[in-house]
Image (tube, rainbow, N blue to C red; front, side, top):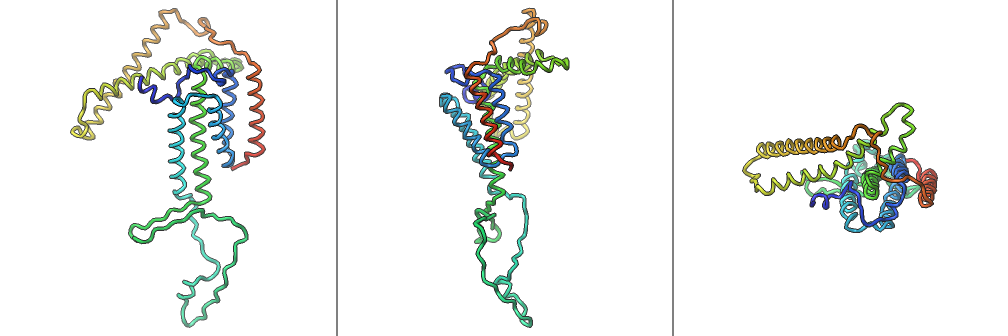
Length: 316
């Protein structure tokens, strides 16, 4: 399917089998939660280091370039656009600075009867710190005059938002890319077993998660079929106008919901025909969850990761 190949986010990579595929899914869940929680209250250097760690992790796993080029390429482009916009946008601190010493303009505008204050010489700054990193003003055309200003705060905000966006999207994408849906559900079921003390339906929640992950390709397939059906009809959108185009898209959305409900009904009918009554009585063990030496080694690396985060990550 063209849409699934052009939008591989959230899909499982069956071949080739990398070392990330061989890890226990519980270990990968622990690393995923750590990567998602580590940027909170971290400084800019720590957030950039996490982004670089994800890129190096992808390269070390030897994931084919055709697979992650589209994912990371679009995310890097989105991060660059967000960074550029936040750099030049106002930083939220509107402070009008008043010079403490008289300037030449103040001396010239001083009333004649009064004695003009003495213009003191400019003193060098104590440090090299500058709040305004870049300030470019265009004043040739007063009606269209504007300025581009980059400050310390706008730089911090740009790095914070762009790195958080990349980390949130790409870490989850990499996790789904190297972990089968059945492994994800079994890992969550094993991790949620202590919640059975509170009489929570852990097995039912795992089954629902499995069906939801299996339903994602069906949704993309239905969207692709509807898009192709619209393209084959060669609709003249310019002649329809905004109202006609909205009516067509509403019809397409209604048809999409009907098709998805039909697929869900077919899945439920197939489960009923096979005699499915409850997850506890029809439990199928897909994988044997056993921690190997590779998993313990990666878990030890998780401890090193949190030590470096607490020692050098700081607080933003």
